Image 1 (cartoon, helix red, strand yellow):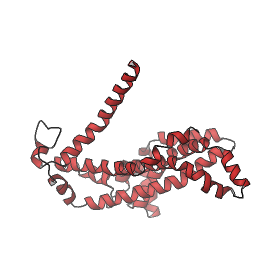
Image 2: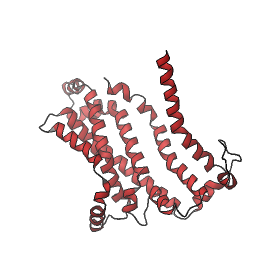
Image 3: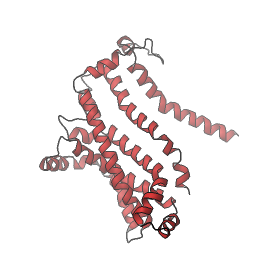
Image 4: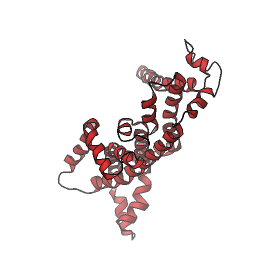
Length: 266
């Protein structure tokens, strides 16, 4: 009983630690300018107002940056799932020499510092004509999210019995039909988790987006370049709108996440 209480206390502390900054940012984003500059600040808005939000959206370039962020995040999501799921399925279902080393190499790519590739990437993208484009940034974000996508989907497919596919083969399905009709529906929770990670990492990534864009900046890159010269209302409203899309996306596909644990342990 004491151990259970301890776990609940730790969970409560973790929830407060995660949600309190989000709550404070949201509170100040929906406060008037006087409340934003006031000290000490209260936990609740002293006067609810859309003044700060309106000021943020009124800044030139914000809407374009939001559109660019959504475009890049959507492309990253699609590329990560379309490339990661087949690779994860191959690792889970087929045995080949060096499979374990391949998994380790995939994981090690996340430890490789992106800053080392900054100049070569910029030069290569300029030569290919994809510098300062949403597609170029999405390629880099896909490279960041792909190792996670491959390893998660590989573990998920390992948890789905191969006998289900073999039963589908005996009923007249080929490998592709068995995958689409049997394996894919069971794998949707894992693919949802992969999609969440790809979307969030793309939405919040700032280094590559700043390096590889000048006019077509994503929202994090736009905020970074203008942060030092921005007033407090702009910073709080910008922080709020960096958080909101990821939360909305998670909320939309939450029903798939609730079943992920059960499927992964079959």
